[in-house]
Amino acid sequence: MKKTKKDPVSELAQQAVLYPKESLVKVSENQKKNSIGIPVESINQETRVSFTPQGVGILCSNGYQVFVESGAGKHAKYSDHEYSESGAKIVYSKKEIYSCDTIIKVAFPSSEEIELFNSNQTLISALDLPHLNSKKISTLISKKITAFCFEYMQDDFGILPVIQSMSEIAGRAAIFLAAEYLASSRGNGILLGGITGVIPAEVVILGAGTVGQYAAKTAHALGANVKVFDNSLYKLRRLYSNHNLSVYNSIIQPDLILKALKTADVVIGALRPEYGRTPCIVSEDMVMQMKDGAVIMDVSIDQGGCFETSRVTSLEKPTYIKYNVIHYCVPNIPSTVPQTASNALNNILTPVLTDINKFTSLNTYLWEKPFARSGIYLYKGILTNSYIGTKFGLNSKALDLLLTSQIS
Image (cartoon, rainbow, N blue to C red; front, side):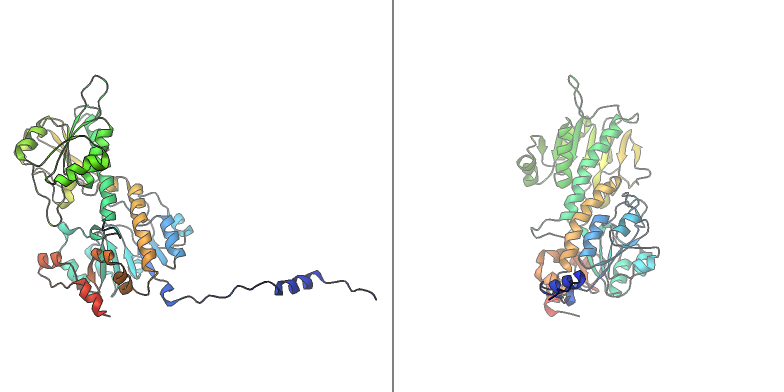
């Protein structure tokens, strides 16, 4: 009997029937796409962006729709094309950006930006408490906004990751910037670390928090003589235990500080209060007794500053001279290195957003993640930060009680 020739296509089709088939998986309700808007920063000297293109790619792969305003990553050297290739939609309208479910920006929104918000959105940004006003807060309340602030956001270990990262950058950058001004024609032409046979520069650091620690570490590594002042013995002891820095340290005493200031080449102001204004511990008279050509870096200027002679400056004009002392008082030093700072923000915020999207609602996320609650100061239009309430005469409620009642 003559065999018929098999059709190769038919044979492959028959074999395919024998292979196991992939089953279709139903997408759960909590995996619906939420939209994130990343606007251009409206403050001239704010050069950071909240997410890098790599971070945007991760958000998109985790179910978010990401909208990036054209030019948002310009200062950090990220192009619209890079964001687009990572899955974001590039938009040219602020109104469209501020229509997203969640708005994530670095600086606190301006009054004009707040007017663009719709009801029941989420805002993640810095709070900038010293410059906050009641009108902005009241408008956000009227729009029933839920708002997180970088300053109070904690991780699972109770650490403030954004503050810590930005403080590390500010501490390191302050020393490099000071070294540049000290060596310039306006300074004394001094190399910060000195060389063999030449006495190194003296660096005085007021504050032993994260900024002070990393400023001390950087100055010490460059070869400077370092003196650190703080009222916390724990923080002063941590300089040695965590960083192995055997540097001069003391509690804050006016006579000791004045003695140190008289011989200092660089003074770093790195004090930071829990709330309110930074204590001003260096008087105008003390600045007058400093060396000509010395450099003051007031990193605390965003909280009011710890030098009586300090006033806010900008990236465009960062310094001024008073009593022959160079003053550098830029409030957001991390913006001098926008790509590094943007990467730091991205590394913190990307896991937070992907984590939130795993839960059925923000309510559930906050209930399951107690540390995350610390960053919230508005919850669905209800003020939950008692300090802000006291400052502006507004009623506030405990977030834990609001979550327990499961308000809608």
